[in-house]
Length: 309
Image (cartoon, rainbow, N blue to C red; front, side):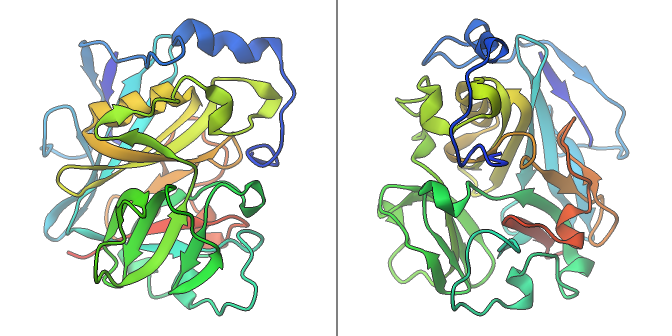
């Protein structure tokens, strides 16, 4: 059922999990290679605005120029859900922040807009924060921030690329990214593409290929990031999903390309503010961490979304 809403690797996306009997319930939800799809029925939750930009989407953040962030939610066959937030191209900019413990910074010098907490300059413009990718120790992709490579970048890896203007894209490094002459500021890579050309990865049913999970389960907390044909970025988060669920929700939300981000309950994190600088609210039902985690500081990397209007 499609619902319109307003609104660890703890050491496990970085280490092997232990199989458990409960971890196989995802097989009943979605057979390998066959992503589950939301049904056509809809319900509407109360909203804090009188209009929505597009049917099926609810306003999450506005600024002086109008809607900057909107969202929707996809219900899965077992009652779990995937929440999607859409960040409007040209209406927001992005900063990649490095956690206090991961990724490693080596000899790099981080600016205030790349440190483990939201900077004073960002706060008045802050519309959202969301989690980054796997720990560097997993070897799942490279990291660059402020033009400084912290972990070597890998061709063929799915990548979030932020340019020096703050605009961002999701694609495959070495296959159209970076564009010729593009002034790259920051890059966050994580695994192979989850969605490519508007279709799920051919390996979508190979659950272990998408990270080690707590308890060895299939349906766990997961997050992902995609881009649609308009250049909007789409964050997807769920506290119980298989990779196919994440891919299908992003495709149904319009994504033509997508990458998996971090997984497991400690690390799936989306927070949004109704207006720039307003208090953040949690975005993924059941997420573990408080809405102000990126403001008070985080051990892991995250991305801030800033309003331009």
